[in-house]
Image 1 (tube, rainbow, N blue to C red):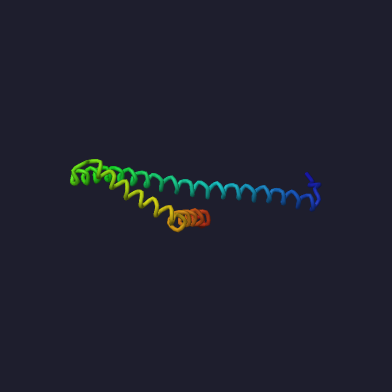
Image 2 (cartoon, rainbow, N blue to C red):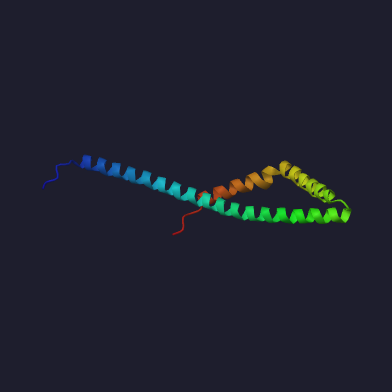
Length: 117
């Protein structure tokens, strides 16, 4: 069988195939990077949740202990609550330096990390 296509038609066909392949490759790379970032965030969230639960239980015990030392249990809870109110104010004042920029930089590093095979 003789190929009746002209060289220009063949060139257009190959360019179309190349474009489709490139688009598919970009799509797969975006999916890979998104999955990498999301899995990293989920694993960090699991660790953070465990730490938060541990800190919560320790704080309840500490509040009960301080309250017992001061004579009234609720004094310990007021002291622990005041401490965390102070920490919340500090975090609000310095939220960009302590939270926003490090999280943003971490996500950017994950997105730009070269793929390892």
